[in-house]
Length: 444
Image 1 (cartoon, rainbow, N blue to C red):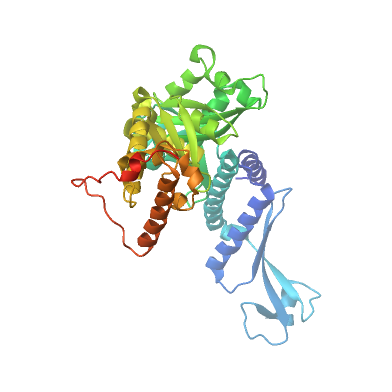
Image 2 (image 1 turned 30 degrees about the vertical axis):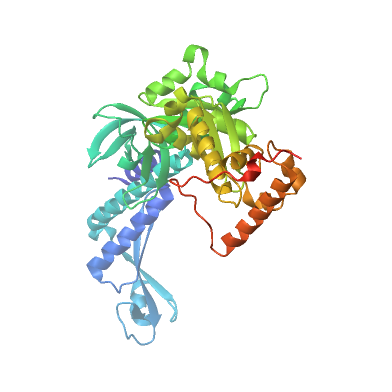
C-alpha cells in the first residue's frame, strides 16, 4: 500500500468509525516501535514517526553519546557517533536511521490487531453513549433468539438487548422474528460492550404507552401520577389534570375506549383501572377501589394509615378481586392499609361488638343483660368511661334511676380495681345472670 493509499484508508476509518486519524497514526507508530524491539531487543531505544501529511514512515534508534560505553545497546562513543554524523558532541543523543521495511510486515500485523480492537472499543462506547440517555424510554425490536429463558432482542444496526425472565410477563409468549416493544430499563457497561436491559413488566412501561396514545399527557395537560401493576393481570393508573375543564380519566379512555383499547391490546388483555387523583384521602381511596364504587370510606387511623371501605354485598368479591388482587393494588396505590367489608359483614361485626360490650357490662355487680343493653345503646359501653360518669349522665337512659346510676358507677369503679388486680369474674353461658331488683326501679 502506497503512502497516499494509507492516508486515504485512515481518513475513511476516521469518517466511518469516528476514530481520529492522528490517534490511528499514534497506534501505528507504537506498533512500529513494538515490532522493531521484537526484532532487535527490548532494551533498544527506538522511536518512530509517521508524517500526517504524506504518510512517510521514519524510524530511529536513539543512543546517548558518552565517553565510555557500559551498555552498547543504548550508548555510543563520540568517535563511533562521528562515523554516522559529523559534529556530534558528548552528552547529547544520536539518532540512527532504521529501514522500516525490515520490520514493516510485523508492524502492519500489530497495527491491524490494535486498530481492530480500537474500532470495537469505539463502537461499544458509541452504543453506550447512544442508549444510556434513552433509559426509561420505549424502543421497538425483533426477537432474535432465546438465551435460557431470557429473550435477546435485535435493536438494529448490530445492537442487541436482553429481556431477563424477571422483566417478562408470564402470560406473554414470543417467537423468533416477532416484533416486540419494550422499555429500556437500564444500560450498563460490560467487557463485551454495553448491556441493554429491556422490560415489559415494569410499571413505567404502561406509563410510556399512555404517553404515546394520549395527546393530553404528551402536552402536559394530564399527568400520570403513578402506576401499580401485577403484570399480565391488572394495572391501576392514577391520572391528574392540570386543566379543570379536562377530565383526566375521560381523556385517557377516549371516545368509546379508542385510546385505552390499543394499550390493552399491547398488554395482551391486561386490565387497566384509571383512577382520578384526589388530595383528599377518603376520595382517593374510594377512586382507587375502581371498578367498584364504595358506599363509604372511613379513616380508622391517620398514624397507622388504616381505613375501612364499605361496599354493597354484591360488590364485595369484585372489590377484593381475584386472589385479593384489586384490594392489594389499591393498598399499594394509596399507601393505606384498607379493610374492605360488605354491608352484612359490617352489620354482623357491629352486632358482635355490641354483644361483647353487653357481656362485659353484665360482669358488673348488679347489672343484668337488660341494663347492660340500655347502657350500650346509650353510648356507655366503655367501663372506664362509665366509672368516671356522674349519676345525671345515666338517669337520662330508660329504666335507670338515680340510685341505680350510683350503684352502676360504683360497680364500674370496683370492676376496674379488680381488673387491675387480675380478679375479673367471667360470665358463664349456662348460668344466666339474674336480673337485679334495680332493673325495675322507677326512674326518679
